[in-house]
Length: 169
Length: 358
Image 1 (cartoon, helix red, strand yellow):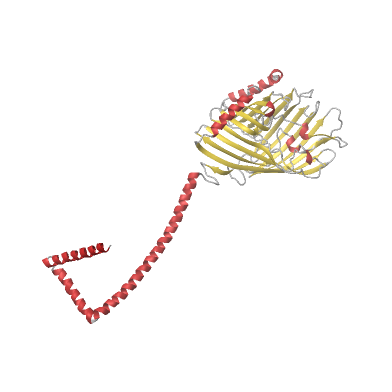
Image 2 (tube, each protein chain N blue to C red; image 1 turned 180 degrees about the vertical axis):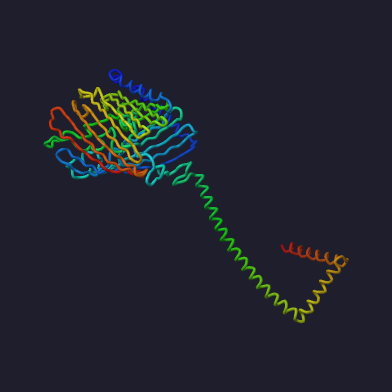
């Protein structure tokens, strides 16, 4: 090869100089990247320190973050949304419950008023008297044979009603 | 080399295909980057002078996509897609002094469209349009002024033409000078060895049965400076490239900011030529703060025609005002002597511009 015949001394000089330079010690190899004719190295005006717009990077994220991060973000977003919805629905439920309690209170108020009117009437007064006697009997006759028989009768009555309902089906 | 090349290419293609279907992706990235490099170029050819608004061909306007996958902490597969788009390329003769129009249709031009497979012990194989092994071996430069001045001096005002004193065109600056920087970028397959300390080697094979070999070196000393060098040889001597070629360059940057760069290259056994063209280039520079300054000298013989003697001197200043933005200015004198042609006028050019990476 011509270069190694007529210009070999130049080539050898080149190799010797580089070898001597590297052999001087106190140094290390480094990664030289050509710059002449190539794109400007370093940061970019729009892309920041990296000098590159990272569209996707599985380690660092990017415009389209890595899948796991994306999922995590999606989950976080969903949780946040759900949380927000939960908060909203909880508030609404509380208001609805309060409204129902208000409705219940109105009904009971009305029924209590009717009860008071019924108790004032003659019929109501007699029936209420009877009810009070029943309560009294329950307290005093709890351990008596009569009360036990009364309990058996109630069970028998429930059984008859159940049997009757079975026969209708 | 010719005999084994088809087999080598086939084997490598199969190997690359197998590697590409390995599923265990460990890291993936995809990035976009680019730059705009525009300048005002003034020229004087001895008969006329003119101002041009150009795209600085020292480092053209372009953008790039890159991406890579890591596999098993051993393999890495990546892609590089880089295109340039130059409106009034500073080395295009259509913007010669006296030409009043802009260069015609502006289109994307390919620079790199390749993928590579990298093994952490066995090196890298690249396939596609990209740097041949020999590319940039004449252009190692640590001066910090290569955006406007480096060994490829024809990039600055290559479109201007030398003329005689009666305004007859002799040749263009781009034809009169060359740094013999290998085969530039081509469709090829390329192999780079892993690094042996500060050294690694490369080879590539391309259409037309052309091939090249190259070696690169980079070393730095603590509290002293850094040195980089490269050299190439191609002996293909094919129909596409009917010559043998070599080049090398070396650059040293001292921690004080002073730097020196040398480059040389040439061809021999050139078809149709009696003389062997060659080029020598030297540059002295100084970097301080955000500034870089340099002065260079180029001497070449037989480049455009046998017995041509071309010389050039340039000075440059680059101001890295911000990390992503730099402004620059350069003056360059060009001279050409050609047998049988008398009174070729010297050519002067001044370029002032800026490069913004986005």
